[in-house]
Image (cartoon, rainbow, N blue to C red):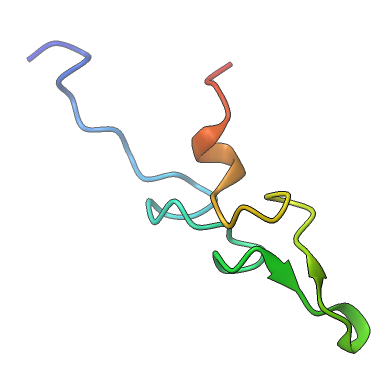
Length: 55
């Protein structure tokens, strides 16, 4: 089995769900009762660690 065929471990942030772990994939937060765009995923709802290129 080559390295490209080996399964990747789940993401440490989202545990493999690819949903933002801060807003739970909604793209929005509710700080102090006001709805605002999630700053971690920039409102996409997608895990920022999964979409970031590997360093």
